[in-house]
Image 1: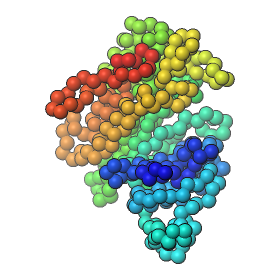
Image 2 (image 1 turned 60 degrees about the horizontal axis):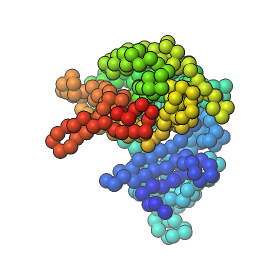
Image 3 (image 1 turned 90 degrees about the vertical axis):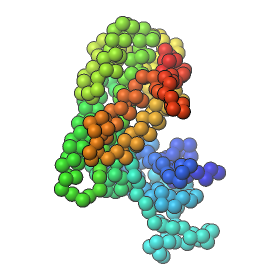
Length: 371
């Protein structure tokens, strides 16, 4: 049994984790909780809305157990499904507020908790808008951020923009949603700067990881390679997307995927709609592109490197102190640099000693061997 990764709760069949936490080599922790909906107050302790069901259910005692492992690492007893009762001695025994004795082993089980430093939200693109709203509102984002700061204890929240998936039938709706995410982060930034001058409260910030941009570049490059978009027109669009440093302009330019008809080219596979430009490795879809195996879940062996690097880069940005910083050294400039470098298909500089060499990651993506 692995001791550097603990499953707190399984979603179903002990093959899909709902709540888990891992120990890093330097003694830190990385935790994850699957919420099939937005992370909102109404989902708290809502077992009927727990994964794999939709609705955004999450359990407060699982969050408390994660915080205990952040405070002190230990082995835990996993729980099955959202209806499984807590197994932590801190939840089932209340003899002492700070430490409880595990009746099985006789060893003390510390119940102190430690908050998280950073919370990353992969905002959901719901698959059934008849049951709950398909996309977040500004009020939703505000509540999600508030829970992250006040309940989870984070000082930094990273919001991921929503990527192209087979759930998205109207690119304009997706663009509008990502516009909302970017605008909310900028509004929060402006408000936080004003508050810092008149407050002694800890610094709070919201950064954006532009996963949508990455999905646009993947979709575009694959569409060029399989002949869905004419090469000249596709290369011109790619150049314009790479050149812009403004998220509003990028979002507007990305609508060209729908304007040229590429986004609307779909195919039915096993009863579900797939975007040819994302899913297929040729126009007749006799092969797959290896961007996504099902139009929803990403092929992480091919795409995970940039996602991991982009997130690590943004975490470094969260440590910036903008007080007295030059224009090119601010947190906003750092975020822009991370997204430009990693949430794209621009060749990544690879550090080798004191020298930076151009380093192209070889992949099995159709037409993307040089990226």
